[in-house]
Image (tube, rainbow, N blue to C red; front, side, top):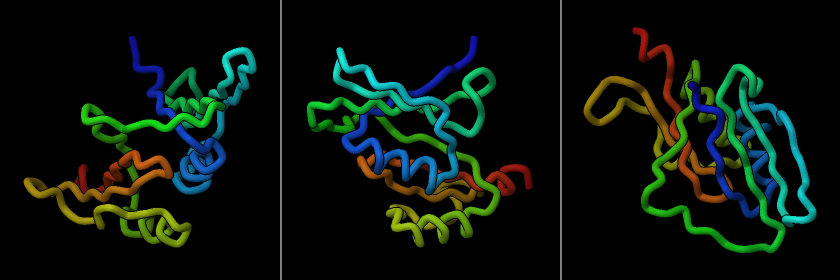
Length: 131
Protein backbone atom coordinates (compact mmCIF):
# COMPACT_ATOMS: atom_id res chain seq x y z
CA UNK A 1 0.00 0.00 0.00
CA UNK A 2 1.01 3.62 -0.49
CA UNK A 3 -0.56 7.05 -0.21
CA UNK A 4 -1.82 8.12 -3.65
CA UNK A 5 -3.03 11.69 -3.23
CA UNK A 6 -4.49 14.35 -0.97
CA UNK A 7 -7.49 16.32 -2.22
CA UNK A 8 -8.15 20.01 -1.63
CA UNK A 9 -11.25 21.87 -2.83
CA UNK A 10 -10.31 25.18 -4.45
CA UNK A 11 -12.41 28.22 -5.38
CA UNK A 12 -10.22 29.45 -8.25
CA UNK A 13 -8.43 26.65 -10.10
CA UNK A 14 -6.17 28.98 -12.09
CA UNK A 15 -4.99 30.74 -8.90
CA UNK A 16 -4.40 27.38 -7.19
CA UNK A 17 -2.45 26.03 -10.18
CA UNK A 18 -0.39 29.23 -10.23
CA UNK A 19 0.46 28.79 -6.55
CA UNK A 20 1.30 25.09 -6.65
CA UNK A 21 2.95 24.99 -10.11
CA UNK A 22 4.51 28.42 -10.62
CA UNK A 23 5.10 29.17 -6.94
CA UNK A 24 6.00 25.81 -5.43
CA UNK A 25 7.37 24.21 -8.60
CA UNK A 26 4.95 21.29 -8.94
CA UNK A 27 3.97 20.03 -12.37
CA UNK A 28 0.43 19.74 -13.67
CA UNK A 29 0.18 15.99 -14.23
CA UNK A 30 -3.35 15.82 -15.55
CA UNK A 31 -6.52 17.88 -15.70
CA UNK A 32 -10.01 16.65 -16.52
CA UNK A 33 -13.33 18.47 -16.78
CA UNK A 34 -16.47 16.58 -15.76
CA UNK A 35 -19.36 18.52 -17.34
CA UNK A 36 -21.99 16.11 -16.01
CA UNK A 37 -20.84 16.71 -12.46
CA UNK A 38 -19.88 20.34 -13.08
CA UNK A 39 -16.37 20.04 -11.65
CA UNK A 40 -12.71 19.86 -12.73
CA UNK A 41 -9.96 17.74 -11.22
CA UNK A 42 -6.32 18.77 -11.57
CA UNK A 43 -3.51 16.58 -10.24
CA UNK A 44 -0.18 18.25 -9.44
CA UNK A 45 3.03 16.97 -7.91
CA UNK A 46 6.79 16.69 -7.97
CA UNK A 47 6.73 13.11 -9.28
CA UNK A 48 4.32 11.21 -11.47
CA UNK A 49 1.34 9.45 -9.94
CA UNK A 50 2.94 6.05 -10.49
CA UNK A 51 5.86 6.82 -8.18
CA UNK A 52 4.87 9.69 -5.89
CA UNK A 53 2.07 11.07 -3.80
CA UNK A 54 0.29 13.93 -5.55
CA UNK A 55 -2.20 16.67 -4.78
CA UNK A 56 -5.69 16.59 -6.29
CA UNK A 57 -7.22 20.05 -6.70
CA UNK A 58 -11.01 19.85 -7.04
CA UNK A 59 -12.86 22.84 -8.49
CA UNK A 60 -16.66 22.78 -8.39
CA UNK A 61 -18.12 25.09 -11.01
CA UNK A 62 -21.07 26.32 -8.91
CA UNK A 63 -18.99 28.90 -7.00
CA UNK A 64 -19.65 27.41 -3.57
CA UNK A 65 -17.51 28.54 -0.66
CA UNK A 66 -15.62 26.20 1.65
CA UNK A 67 -14.43 26.32 5.20
CA UNK A 68 -11.04 24.75 5.80
CA UNK A 69 -12.26 23.19 9.03
CA UNK A 70 -10.61 22.53 12.33
CA UNK A 71 -9.45 18.99 11.56
CA UNK A 72 -7.11 19.89 8.70
CA UNK A 73 -3.60 20.93 9.66
CA UNK A 74 -1.27 21.53 6.71
CA UNK A 75 0.62 20.05 3.79
CA UNK A 76 4.41 19.76 4.15
CA UNK A 77 7.00 20.23 1.40
CA UNK A 78 10.75 19.67 1.75
CA UNK A 79 13.02 22.41 0.39
CA UNK A 80 16.80 22.75 0.09
CA UNK A 81 17.16 26.42 1.09
CA UNK A 82 14.20 27.71 3.06
CA UNK A 83 15.31 31.36 3.05
CA UNK A 84 15.77 31.43 -0.73
CA UNK A 85 12.48 29.60 -1.20
CA UNK A 86 10.59 32.08 0.98
CA UNK A 87 12.26 35.02 -0.77
CA UNK A 88 11.24 33.64 -4.18
CA UNK A 89 7.67 32.97 -3.03
CA UNK A 90 7.38 36.41 -1.41
CA UNK A 91 8.53 38.00 -4.70
CA UNK A 92 5.63 36.18 -6.40
CA UNK A 93 3.16 37.62 -3.91
CA UNK A 94 2.78 34.49 -1.76
CA UNK A 95 1.78 35.17 1.84
CA UNK A 96 4.41 33.97 4.33
CA UNK A 97 2.54 33.25 7.58
CA UNK A 98 5.61 32.11 9.57
CA UNK A 99 9.06 33.28 8.65
CA UNK A 100 11.86 30.68 8.42
CA UNK A 101 13.33 29.59 11.70
CA UNK A 102 13.80 26.62 14.00
CA UNK A 103 10.81 24.77 15.42
CA UNK A 104 9.85 25.97 18.88
CA UNK A 105 10.82 22.66 20.50
CA UNK A 106 13.47 21.44 18.08
CA UNK A 107 16.12 22.40 15.57
CA UNK A 108 14.40 21.65 12.25
CA UNK A 109 14.07 24.89 10.25
CA UNK A 110 10.52 25.49 9.03
CA UNK A 111 8.31 28.20 7.57
CA UNK A 112 4.64 28.40 6.62
CA UNK A 113 3.00 29.90 3.55
CA UNK A 114 -0.65 30.21 2.62
CA UNK A 115 -2.22 29.17 -0.69
CA UNK A 116 -4.94 31.27 -2.40
CA UNK A 117 -7.68 29.37 -0.53
CA UNK A 118 -6.09 29.81 2.90
CA UNK A 119 -4.57 26.33 3.22
CA UNK A 120 -1.34 26.26 5.23
CA UNK A 121 1.76 24.79 3.59
CA UNK A 122 4.72 23.97 5.83
CA UNK A 123 8.15 24.30 4.25
CA UNK A 124 10.80 22.11 5.90
CA UNK A 125 14.45 22.73 5.17
CA UNK A 126 15.83 19.31 4.31
CA UNK A 127 19.50 20.05 5.00
CA UNK A 128 18.65 20.99 8.61
CA UNK A 129 17.07 17.56 9.11
CA UNK A 130 20.21 15.70 8.04
CA UNK A 131 22.77 17.95 9.71
